[in-house]
Length: 109
Image (cartoon, rainbow, N blue to C red; front, side):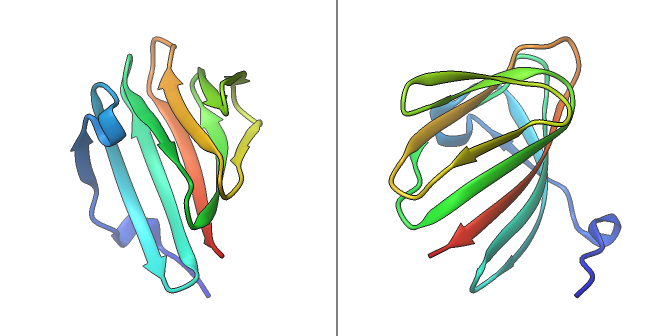
């Protein structure tokens, strides 16, 4: 199955999960989960939240930042993947000077 993100509408979210700043996202969703492309602007964050029903897999394409998974800091940079399993809590913060671009797969369990 092909997912064409070029044809998906970009939606802007402010203060996602109690975080800061703006996040622009394009999303594909079905009963198995979601595939999302997100751009976190400079200083933006996705606030701390628990993955109650799913695994959350975040691959960093460009930019830099940090994630906290169950309180443990992880450095985000191109080519790394931040994985937050079901039952864990996490947040993502753009600490760089440019947008933080991440591809996320949310695997419903």
